[in-house]
Image 1: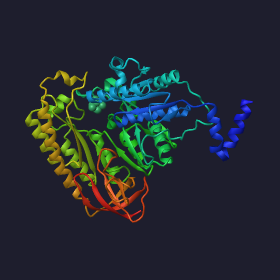
Image 2: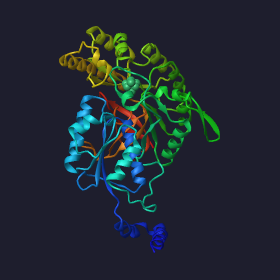
Image 3: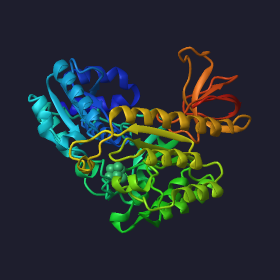
Image 4: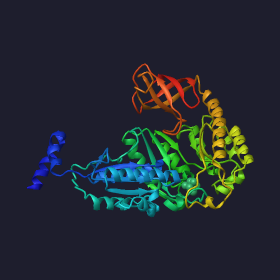
Length: 471
Ligand code: SF4
């Protein structure tokens, strides 16, 4: 009888899904889960995988903790301040729901979580998707229905439809002294090239216009696999940074490379940028310029001549945007080290720079270095670096005024304080969330995800102002 009912529903669903769906679901309400995702884009991809799996099993997402069957908190443990934020988010979920599963980087140190919140149902570590799902099954058993539980083939995305993060590896072989990620996430484990390309294909088919390639160290991709080949569209593709970038460039969408270190082999990818196959954009976390500080940080590629390298990259691809992050106030950083960093920034003329004041992380090797820098000096150096770089960024942005740029539209009006006809977009030199914005005036309404040609009219310190001239 049940089988009969289901067959009837399945047939009916092909022509009139909304009418038939409601009474069917009323018979078996799917468990509802609230989800908090903290931390970096790599953690966001973990959240997407967990949610994709749960949605495939018929779970529904709740907007609020209150009223959900349980809550999941994907934590960040990178810095002590991030751990404090994670513990606060767990506390909120406990107060508003009471049934909480914790996962993510901080899950590698479960005792910290259970000490603060002894009532959590389960704590699992980063990338332990199976453990999270098992814990969910125990707390709120799935009400699986193969007809109702269809999910899009690209999985569930937490980003807007037109861009997606694509994680090509997990873990890291480096041992930077300020970082505990390798302890939390383990050594480098790369996906095969075919696996990455299949996911890219699904994303593009679903309407994604921009792929953001992420990992802990993108330039190390494939090292653990000894660059083994895998079959893709009738040919073999090596798990190698250049080969993967070249294949991703064939999809005809924007491909943006994040977390690339200045190793010599990165030079090979610059011609792909000059040819328009991959976006002329490199996110290179230099962190410092002083050889002494870099040595104490144990940074990868610290020996490389980074100024020469960046100059060469720009010769090969003049439109290249280089983004980076830096840490000031690292233990033992002298005024001379800091002055060297400012001089280096003057020479390098990076387009976009983020800066962090050094923060000790429990368990990091840098804690044993001593020579801690007082907070007031860190603050002073941070302010000086930001002011120094602001002038450089402004100068770089000004060069774009009067030129045409392709811009991907992220948001359309009404934007607070702006004309409702103005849209927010990004050039090829701007990654979402971390770089600048282009405010675009258009005579016809733009659509989110559309890539328009705009003329840059004006530059601010970080943002650009433009008029659409081509669609
Ligand atoms: S490269 Fe360094 S900072 Fe980045 S994840 Fe690896 S160890 Fe941490």
